[in-house]
Image 1: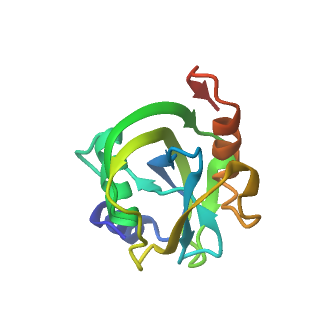
Image 2 (image 1 turned 90 degrees about the vertical axis):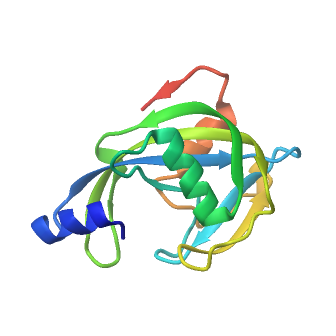
Image 3 (image 1 turned 120 degrees about the vertical axis):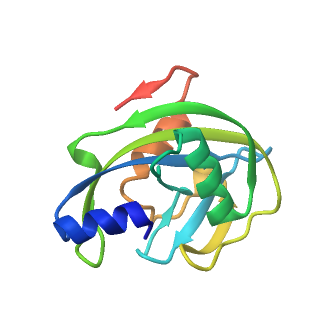
Length: 156
């Protein structure tokens, strides 16, 4: 847990807090999507996380992708903005959040994907037609939007 979130949790306990975040749709040349097997919940999900104080959404995306997949983002395209009641989540420890997330498509990067062993236990590319059934519920709409994406920014 980052210092800012830790400070908020000390003040409000596990009450719902608002968390701005980013999600990465990392796509290889075969059109496959990179997912990570989470360690905090029993799901596959998109790399991503919270935007920290004094950090832009793009900087957060680059940091989160590097931390969780060991890839360096070279180029990205903002695809969608997600907010609202359907983006509420309760962690296993009881901490509640409501996300406000920007999803980015990443087609250019360097490095070889590998899990960090902390937030993710595995990372791998999946064909969009063969995604795991145990996807993070918050990420399902993002993945569906990507599959239908026509280049126009989406607001949900």
